[in-house]
Amino acid sequence: MFAEQYSKNKFVQIPDVFEPELANALEKMLAGLPWQLVYSDPQDGVVQLSNADRQRLGPQGMNQLMQKVMALATRNYGYCYNAYQMNEAHKENRDSGHPIHKLLAFLNGEEFRKFGEAVIGETGITQVDAQATLYTRGSFLTRHVDDGAQHERRCAYTLGFTEGWMTDWGGLLMFLDKNTDIESAFRPRFNMLTMFDGRKIHSVSPVSAFAGKPRLSIAGWLRND
Image 1 (spheres, one colour):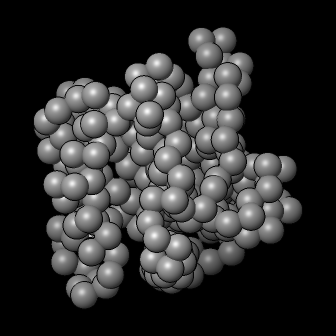
Image 2 (cartoon, one colour):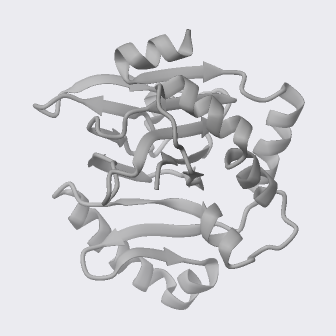
Image 3 (spheres, helix red, strand yellow):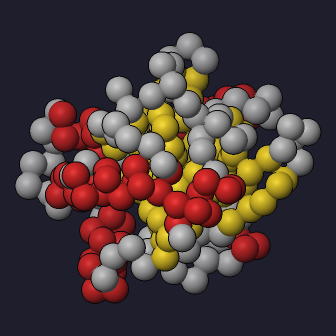
């Protein structure tokens, strides 16, 4: 059923991926990660700021930085949200012993990779990229496509860990047509695996100023390197 849906729409949502008790434990574990603010800069590329970095910049420095990020966003450039780069942390042996590394191992394990291959109708998935993301008020991801420099990104995915999200709070995964009109949009859901063709134009709408909680998820790609 899931493979048929993906074949037809290049998009599928799969509910109840984890047992309820485990899903709740994962939500609590992810919420407590040492987050970094990430944004994209034309000169510096991907920039990651720790809490210490933000403290050094101070309120005035952060205000100037956010003005620059927003000015770039008006030209449809970039993103701004909190993240924990799971693959990067594993390679650098950061936060050794943290259960986040077990989650990354599961995503890169044979069972999940073979499941992904079966859904998207491809073979040869060699790696699963993953980053934990925390969208707070004002966080966004402008419209773009994802296929990778060598077209190695065969499928994008998200794992949602946000309960009770309201559509009016923003943070919607949106798909756009060639005229950049909204084709479809999906609110975050708890314990939901979403898989889609990253070559479709997509974005995450800005989280509203009145959002009642953060938007928590894992996001990444199934890759064939």
